[in-house]
Structures are given as C-alpha cells and as structure tokens.
Image (cartoon, rainbow, N blue to C red):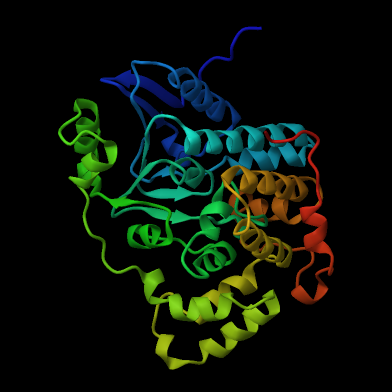
Length: 361
C-alpha cells in the first residue's frame, strides 16, 4: 500500500537544520482535520532520525491565529452521519501527535500567535519552547460546545497554579499572553513583529545556540496576568468539592464589591457556568481533578480518549453544542439535561468507565 499523499494545507520543509511545519488553512484559522494531522505525523516521524534536522518549528499562516483547533464542523457532519469510526481515528491521531510532540527527541518550538485553542494548544502547548505574542488568545473552549478539554489540555490545566485549571476548563475563558505564561501554557512573550527574526536566529544558530537561549534574546516581560490578579476568588470558589458548591460560592462572591468592576470576576464566571451544559461541567471538573493524580501526559490523553469517545457516541450535547455555536450559529443550545438538578448522579462514573473499541497507544 502506498503512503498517503501529503496534505497541501500543511507546509513541510527543512532549511538550515530547522524542520518547519506551517499550518496553511487561514480561512478556517488553521483548524486541522485528519488529513492534516496525518501529514504532521509523517513529518515528525521522518525527522526523528534525520541528521539534517536539529529542531522543529510549528507556526501558522494568517493574521488571525496559529490554530482554532480541530475541524469541529467536519466532526459534526461525520458523527451526525453515523461515521463514529472516522471521528475516533481523528482523535486517536491527534492525541498520538500530542504525545509525540511532548516526547520528541529534538527541540520543538511553537509560535502560538493569535488564536490558539483546543487542538491548537494540543500542538503548541506540549512543545518544548512555547512562544506567545501580544495578539495571542489561548483557550480550552470545549465546555462551550458540549464536551471536555482534550488534546492533552487536561494535563496542562491540572498543573496550572491553584484552581486556575478548573476555572479555565469550566468557563472556557480565554488567556492573553501574560495569562498563558502564568498558567503554564506558554514560556515566552515575543512581539509578533519579531517572529521572523526568531525564526532566522534559529536557522542561523546565532550565539547562544540553544532554542531557549535564542528566544530569550527577543523575550519581553509581560504585564501582570489578569488571572494572577483574580486568583484569590478563583481559588476560593473553584476549590469547592462539587459543582453546586462552586456555583453557590460564586453567587456569594459576586456580591462582594471588591471585584464588581473587573472584567474577569465572580459574576462573569457565574454567568459562563450557567450557560454551559451540566454534563460537560460535571465530567470536566472530575477530569481536571483526576488528571492531577495521573503519572504523565500519556495517561491524561488515555483518559481524554475515553471521555471523548463517550461524548461522541453516547451524549447528545457535543453535537448540539457544535450545531448551536459553529453550524447554525443561533447560540441557543438545548442541553440534555438542561439543569444540574436533572443530572443523573452516576453520569461521571458512566463517562469515566467508557471503553473505546481500540486503545489509544
């Protein structure tokens, strides 16, 4: 059997020892599908033992962002048509790629410029040197569309300071560059205008020679993170044991005038949670807390693979959320169940006990 053809929406080339993988689908903010992921994996496999490649760079085409994540419209069409195996293959390939990036034997540098969400974080967030710019907006927005943070996002969220991980996962709030560095999703802030110079330095091996040292030549100190400023009330509310307790504490904190004027406040968090599907919130809260006790990224990806399989095959909110937010765009999802009071008490155990037809690794 011949190897699949490379997808032209992934630009792969080598120059001066740098293997460069550029996402080239700007009309969709570089959202990736199975064909694109397969091409990325083929490049990484080819370069693993290639003496002509010393390091790998991920970047994206267009002004809007590095990657909006997976092509959820394609997943919606496939799952809706009963082609669950195709969706399973997409997630299997994506999650394996996340592990390959994290474990790659050569340095991996990612330019998370502009919008970097979901599967985009799965590529950039597990790189060894993660660069953000003044335009970066990072998020794990999965609960907004009826499922749970994946692509290794649960592993990153679980290791954010305090209860920042629960907050970001449940609310789908977006991070700017300072937030992303504070939360552990990025390492360096570099002005967007300097990214070509960073790439040139990596190619020419300017002194100093390591990727991290080279990027530090362009690194700027970010302003204080808004997440850091909000951490007191975030830790207070999101450390509660259950979703009802988190919501109740947010209601109490929303009455506190100390945060009333802030853009990121207990009131805005409460409003976000009240819009989210109860099932996704319950499963996601359990997933982040479970990931804290897992031994590594691969174990977190295995957990995510089970949960995503459950959402895709058993629970209607995933398709409904994609429909409301991405397809029909009426912004009026009909969640099942619609309220926490209606949520079955065994729903989290059901999600975590799901087994996919084939293992991830």
